[in-house]
Length: 111
Image (cartoon, rainbow, N blue to C red; front, top):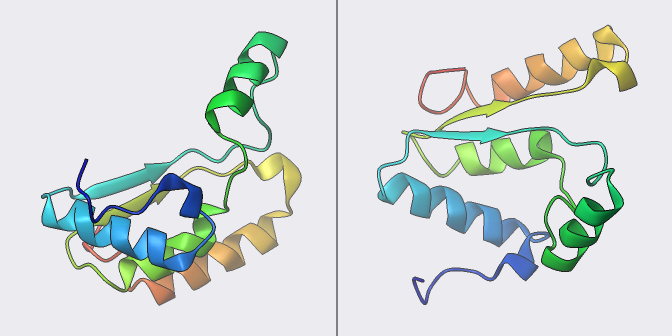
């Protein structure tokens, strides 16, 4: 691993995500995709593994990370899923519209 890479324990700090965006962009990546998850794995065996390996738990809201990452790269596009069962359509549309404006349509022009 690149010695300048931040440790994943820093997932809750903005410099970690900025570093990842710059690194992925420098490595030639053109897209970053997040699947929204409202909980860790539901099966107890999977849940234990998720907690032991810090997979999907704890999790950040990618909609808050994307603008910061988009601000430091020009060739990285972003995609994210969302579960509309937990929020009203107007609120979702407003958040997506704000995200679209802040990233100018996704930094790579693909949104």
